[in-house]
Length: 550
Picture (cartoon, rainbow, N blue to C red):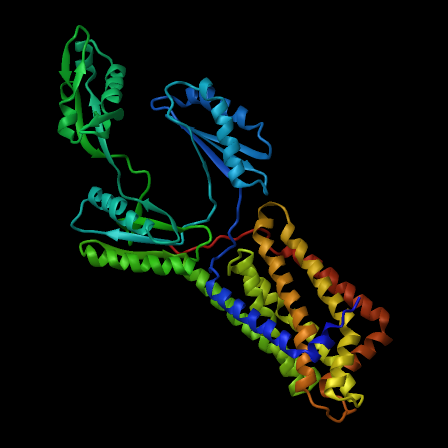
């Protein structure tokens, strides 16, 4: 059914013009607000359950904790994979749900499942921690901190206490992770001979240390008419206080801790290291939060690091790895390609139509279709990333198809001796159903890409919907703006029966193809077979990671 909205737009130009003025403003504002990221934000429902039991061996945790948790979680609806990792004193069970399961619901289901078996778990465990795992990819920035006047312990503490706190307050930063450096550790090395002489075991000393070196809530009390919280403070503030801690012995005797053990303020065994130019440094990596822009977060982090360098001249913090620059280069390259593609499309239109006014109308259709698409992207929560920008780049040539069909038919009617106004009315009505069919076909081809399953479907969700949104706006342009501009902007010109070189060459090629049907079909099959074979020569993979020179 053809509603002939083109004729309505020609007779009532103001509503159509106002509509696209509003869409252009919304699109331009949305474009400035869209986050720039390397890849789309994906939402994979993954939940982790961490249960700690200090001092427990991995074999004990496996039978008493991990297996019970896995058996209970396996019955939850939508569970896809359950994996566990066990180290001394801690069991972590990771649950991956089917795509489409709401993450909040997954967290609540896992938390309820663990609560149901809480009474069956050992009494000595700490409170189970159930949390969602956000998949945000690799850190976007990595800095190295150097301080010749500081010890590794002091520099590591500076990064943990000063730098991390400052950067975590930056909007868009989700995590700051230290790489390299050392962690402070108070070591208590027991003297086995001394313990045997006193008739006490290392387990007895460990239990007393755990029972006394802890701060606990002590209830509430009323002091001077006001309610006050009471706490029992047992933790040692200094190493000297820890050394003087009294250890109970059999027979009611007591001994100082430093009489049966050697207490040292040392560092834990390093589990990671960082070097720059073969010199050890303390590095820290910044990961952006979901929905934040790589470029915006990088700029804010750079400003915060500059403030830290100014406030602490004894510490030098320099950027050693920048994934944002790769993202920014890809963004700039894609935008340049988009502009180049638009210019080439306009040139091709001019070569075939050989009409400046008609070419200008086709050129206007491009921004009127692309810019409102950015508004649709923001409304759907998308970002400017490699996938969405790829969709915009690919669709550039498609966006002028509808306008070209409309203009070519209008030009044909003008050559029949009609005025531009009359030609626009009749030609747009005549070709309207074909234009709608073209657009509907393109949308029907690309939209299913957005509903693929698996992780790949999460990445390509934005691809199909961005193409569909841009093509839909191109349909509105073709049915409302293109006939309107043609009616009031084009001029009746005498028809020139002499075709240009481009048309003559195309006509000769088309005539040869029709007269040699078998050869044409054979050539097409050869090209098709060669294309299929070429696919086997290409490397396969979903995502090729970024590599950096060491």
